[in-house]
Image 1: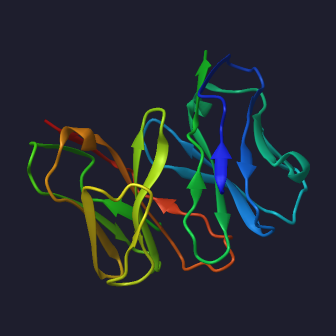
Image 2: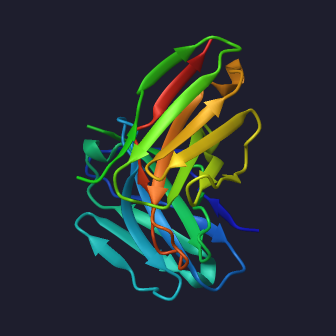
Length: 114
Length: 115
């Protein structure tokens, strides 16, 4: 079964704290892509990152970093020094070859309090 | 700026009405998708289309139909709206993608309330 689990439903942190959003996936395929999207209060999902199954290098983009570990089927997302503008719902998603739809996790709502 | 445009941001309809949600993309994408988003349930796929006049059922197609007469436009139809269809509806598009490497571009969503 293809499945994405985001166990954290809601997280609340104080501004400037670091926070990690967890994503665990299940698949039997060897070729797949993992994604993170951000949904701010405006509603539109915004693409953050894509990682393919053959590339386990961690990635850093400013205050954002992603840790992909095939051994644990996880693709976790860390925000360093969180800001109020980071408040949003974050979705992890999985896509396979063969023009198939994205499979989304249920999302994690992050609230950053000033 | 490339875009997916959903015709209405907020919509209120009566039970039993036929409802049309429209989505237009300007990126010449082959794939288009309709999801609904509910608290605690995440994004659930209703229908998708990979070509004009082609459609595939997603996870929750019951009570919905779709139409894709032109490449840029994908309509979601609620044949007889019911209160349990009150939800946020999100449209997305992507290029045809045999590798799995393309993500989606999303519209801003339509928040539908059925009373």
